[in-house]
Amino acid sequence: MTGTDERVARHDTETPDAIQARFGIEFLDENPADAIAVMSMPMSGLRNPFTNAPSIGPLAILVDAAGGMVNHYRRRADQWTVSSELSVELSVGSFDDHAAPVLASARPLGRVGATSLSICTLTCGDALLGGATVRSFYIPAGDLITDRPPDSLVRTAHTALSDLMAIRPRPLDEGLRVLEQRPDPNLYNDIGIVHGGVAAAGLELAASAAINQEPTNGLLRTASLRVNFLRPFIASDNSRYIGTPMRIGRRSAVGDAQAVGDDGKVAITARVTAYR
Image 1 (cartoon, helix red, strand yellow):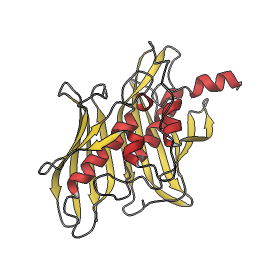
Image 2 (spheres, helix red, strand yellow):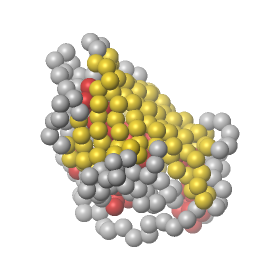
Image 3 (cartoon, helix red, strand yellow):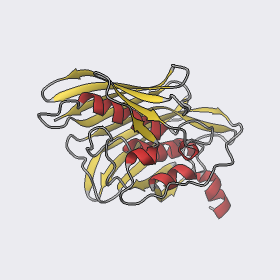
Image 4 (cartoon, helix red, strand yellow):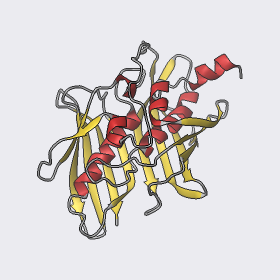
């Protein structure tokens, strides 16, 4: 494949270069003809701003990048892909504040129809953490965002996840946990909406915080994240993630989260299942 062809094949409208640079995502291997992609992303130091615990939420950014790329490879030339569902399933207790990057090895699952489904394994060194899926549907190609301001955020080993994601916790409100999603063009896909993996990460952070309000017996750690993208989520003055506890038991819990836009409409939903 020529260098020009590689750039065209790699240009996934869902995960542009700005997202990859912000979160340190790197291509390790790819085969567009077979729709295979392997990417890595550093996870060390990425902590929930409410609980200060290591968060699995940012894994959704890596999953959406790798799995979305696989679905992107399978599109027609006159189409783009848009994520409609994303899931992450982890072995309980397998994820911690890893020093080494996490790898996502993604490949197709089944045939292309009304949607395209990809599956990936998540590993860190020799440890198998779990798996994930991304389902995309196809839309007609149209105009793209071509101009982005230079990224003013310089990532260091001490950069907080809240800064990377341009999120800000609101004061605690009874059982709810609310994260504001601040506008940041470097977090948008090429269609101009918040990157699906970034939004999924925000939902996990909010839901996890909602079920860990009183961690007297130890933190409930996310094992399952399931996300449904309903409509475009646009970052604005009042865009936010709202986490709600559904059930909190002694050893397990379920929490829901919604991404809500300025218009008050729910754009994305998620359910988190966690265990001690």
